[in-house]
Amino acid sequence: MKKAYLEIRPLWTVLACGLATLLTPPMASAKPAPAIEVRVETTLPTAETNRPALALDGKQGTFFKSSRSADEHDQFTIYFSHGVKLKRIEVLTGDQQSTNQLAAGVLEVSTDGKEFKEVAKFEAGVSKAKLKSLPVMAVRIRPIKKDQTAQEPTGRGQFRRNRGSLVLREIVLDPAPVVAKVTQAMCVMVDTSEVPELDAWGLHAKALCEEWYPKLVALMPSEGFEPVLSTRLLFKKDKGGVADTSRGTDINIAGKYVIGHTNDFGMVIHELTHVVQAYPGPKDGFSKPGWLVEGIADNIRLFHFEPNVRRPRIDPDRAKYTDAYKTTAGFLDWVESHYDKELVKKFNAALRDGEFQDTLWQKYTGKTVDELWKEFTDSLRKSV
Image (tube, rainbow, N blue to C red; front, top):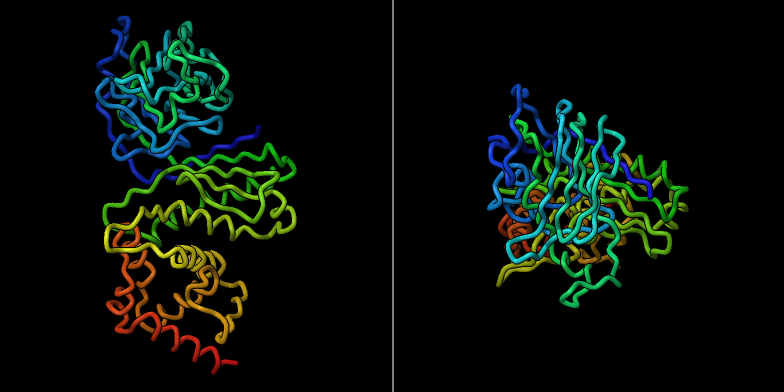
């Protein structure tokens, strides 16, 4: 399996007070070590306010929690600003009910921040490693494929322990360094193991995701929104269609399609837009039209990522604004140019708040969506 990780400029920073309190008291140090800065990269999206830095604050009552379960494509890595000589590492996972543990995984360290070596496995949600004061530049927690045949004493399968999310309760470093700052960087993971001939294509797609993710966030802002800082490009050998987005951050790409359409990087941006959209289900009395969600994603792709590509032809006698994708994208662009230049941003904010209604068309333009569509199609007939 080939995976790649690369940092882009952090979208947010968390200040930490240091690792002054540990679950197990550290051994005394003869000379205080200089404060370090920590950078976190993880493919796991955060659940609510349980940020990655909370796994490093020395408190069992606070922890990192992911919004979905972890699998063998995931990782949680902390990079140090300079080498830290460690005698011991202990990682505790799971909540007080012993659920959301990492049932199958490995603990790895790196002395150069690039190459990693396994130093311990996880047992009952805990991993412990002795390091002989090695100068460590990075520590990585990596889930591995769960053995679904293995049974626990309770009779439940091992793989069931991490069905909903993963809780990293504490990462204990001994001796405990003083942490001046913890930042989280965007993490893009690529897995082309099923179609290795697409390795180069996958790396280019990864670079585009790193470049365009902050741009998409800027194009689709809303009050109080904090974007996830991870996505996974998973290439599937036998997948039909083109691509889709699942689990909030996974972009599943059909290998066969890419082999036949090697220039179509726009579809990656379309799916990455879905990651940034992060629309929840609508509140009572509101809606989340699928055609509009897809239309916004294609509007971003066509009029921002591919502004110079020839526009798709829309048949005014057959098309409907609910056709989604390119048709809806073109309709949105026309409405923005004639009525409200911020329409897509406003719709995005309403959808993200779960408060979209069809009446918003009239609120922002003074006309209903059907009246706008008629004007749009009439303009298409005149231009023929």
